[in-house]
Every structure is written in structure tokens, then in C-alpha cells.
Image (cartoon, rainbow, N blue to C red):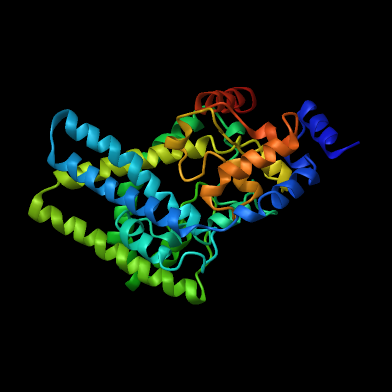
Length: 357
């Protein structure tokens, strides 16, 4: 029996995702067909990030100073462009540290620290999500078995994200400075409130070496910026900060929506094969036209990304096309492709009704 036949049989019997065997032909093809496009190209990264940030901040300024429909239009533009700029944090966790000299520093100065999400909040965390023995388990910071939970868990999962900007402001302006003089609080904040994770049981380990030094400077920058924002309300009032918080809240909601449909969330906690992880993940390739808006910076190919975690975002589309063309329409590879957001949301919602209800 071939690996493909075993996978089809496993799916047909509705066995656990963790029981799906690896499709070695797919794994080999993914690597062999994409070696020549696996290098991050600075001429794409830099303009994309810089233009996204510049347009985002200009639109945010427009949302603050303008009125009526113009303010709303600027607010909407700010949400999508700042969202795109923010999602480069995902690239920072995967690209080699020497691939784009200066990119991490500039991103943190222009985006990470001003948005109170410096790169340390994802670096050293997101890679655990890709670990062969951690994905979908209790040790995965970015996994919850949402498809197996109660139906009310889906709206709760989405709506809690609206509190993120207020939480980040409290964290950087109050909790981190207090932690300097209260070590138990510092330990608690690091373990429980220093990572962009969704698993409430995740506890972050203390930083070490060069990473600890990077954390110190990023924390310092974020705290100084957060305190400056609060101090600014004493001069210019609260309206501008309230609008900025609202824009970031909608941006966080958009990211949470993307997260909700990035996986099928069907694993019950056991370790999975790479193929099992792939089949629990999602691609929304063309001809869907809206996925680049809600899943930008290559994240519309999230399943392909799980096959090739170090592939730069600008190459994921070509990687997906090559592998798909090579393996064919009936392959394991095609089983993670979906037509759009709504079918995915409906699939997960139905699962909660059947399995979690």
C-alpha cells in the first residue's frame, strides 16, 4: 500500500490526524523543486515593508485628523497596510539572521516598537509551532483544538483579540516597568504575556545570551514608547489615542480571523507527522482574489509554508505552483487547498457542532 493510499484510507475512516503517515514523495518534491527560489530577496522585502508602514501611518494620521467618510476610509486603509507591515514579524522568525542585514532592526524601530509588538514576542515562539514533536500538542504555543471545542469558542476566540492593543499598552507602560522592581511580576509577565500565542497553558522560558540582550533593548524601546503615548494624552487629549487603539484592535481582529482559518484545528494533542501537519493546515491559492488582503505576506499559502518553513514569502506562490503541477490534482498536496475564507469557517464551525457540541 502506497503512502497516498494509506492517507486516503486514514481520511476515509476519519482517524485522528496524528495517525496520518508521511507522504515521502510530496516531502521530497517540496524540497527538490524549490531550491532555486529559497533565498530571501532584499529588493522585495525592503520596499514592501517600508511602503506598507509609510502608507499605514499616513492613513492612520488621516483617520485621526479627518472627519466623516474620509476618516473611515483612512482607517480602513490603515488597518490593511499596518496589518501587512506587522506580518513581516512572521518572516523574521524564519529567515536566516544574516539574510537581510538591518531588516530586523529597522522593522522593530518602524513597526514592532511603535505597534508595541517587537519581534521578540514572536521569535523563539513561532518556531515551536513548527517543531515536529510539538505541533498540535499542549506544548505548541500557537495551537488550540478549536474544531473539537464548544461552538461558542469560535466567537470568543475572535472577539478577545479586540482587547490586544489595550493589553499591550498596559503591559509595556505599567507591567514591564513594575517588573524591574518586582521580580515575581517580571517572571509572570515574561512567561504569560510576552509572546503572540493562543495556547493559554503556554509558559515561555527565560531568554538567554544574545537573545536576552535583544529582548532588553526591545522591551526598553516599547516601554518608553508606551509611556510617551500616555503622556501625549495630557497634551492632546485622548481622541487620537482612542482612534489609534481602535485601528490596531481591528488589525488584531483581522489577524485573528486569518489565524482561525490557517488550520483545521482537528488535532487532539498527539504528535503528528509533517504530512499530518500539512493536512491540518490551509492554502487558499488563486483564483481567490481576497486572500492576499486577509492573508498577506505569503500566508495564503500557510500549508505550503508548513512544508517549507524557511521559504521566503515572495517565493511561496511559485513553490505552490511547482509542487502542484508536479504531483497532480489527486495528490496529497492538493488536499490542503480551499476556495476561500467562508468555506473554511463553515467547515470549522460544523466541526464544533458535531464534535464539540
